[in-house]
Image (cartoon, helix red, strand yellow):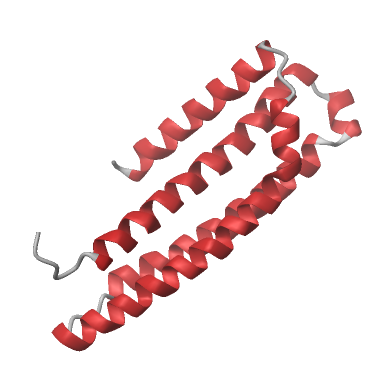
Length: 147
């Protein structure tokens, strides 16, 4: 799926989840936001371990085939930067979402839906990164195995 289509899909899903939680008067998002930074940081640690396995397997394949995997290494690095940026966005958005000053100055309904949409977006995007790294890991582990 094209990256732009992914982002549009993630934004749409995030907004729909946020609007649903708002109209259902669900407290889930507040509880979710309380643990989001810890969750994303833990997932980053897991992704680092998974990426280390990927890098080891790529080195093994490189030794056998001579292929350099420059694009793959670039994508792994970009994935780390993206994860760190998502954690930073979540951190700032949680802080803004708790701001009494902003809540009093902005229509609180739209503010709540907007903040929650961004938090859902960061989480959904993170899940996609996990899916991508996991898929890569299993593809590499199966490399060279007869079907």
